Length: 211
Image 1 (cartoon, rainbow, N blue to C red):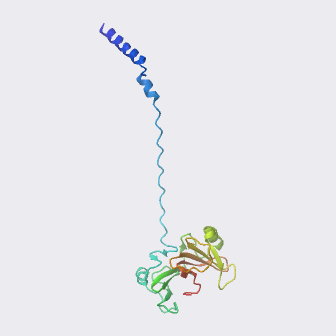
Image 2 (image 1 turned 45 degrees about the vertical axis):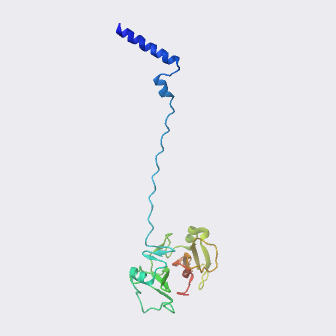
Image 3 (image 1 turned 135 degrees about the horizontal axis):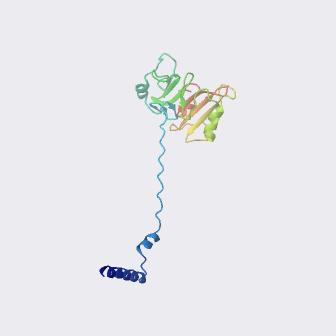
């Protein structure tokens, strides 16, 4: 008898809830909006460190344009060949290879400040765009696009030329005098290939040592 009464009471309660418009528990659950899936977080791509042995417009290895001569000597040593002729007035401008510098590397000091780093014959180093001595001028120009400004070579006929890239880029072919300017010059030989690379300030435009 008790079981029958409990069953009747439960049925009455269900009818009362239905009359009030309250949906059964299962219907309420089904009516909920589905939760949108959370998109997975994209992993941050690893940052490739700059090549410390690449020549850039601001330096090479431990050297940075603007360093004092004492700082350059502390990093790479003094002149490997002090008897060689540098500039006409070494106190004002001097160019030499430090004793511990990579083969084929010259640095220029003007008024006690590093203003230029050059890669010349014998160097196996490259620029920060991956170009070294012997690479084709056409590849250099293609890589830099409109930022590369070509000018005639002072001593040799075409295809010898200078390909200059300033940072930030400039299309002007006029001589740059701003001491804060930074750039790279690819000197192209008569075979159409890179013969030397210079990085630094306005002195990268010098074609004959300190002039």
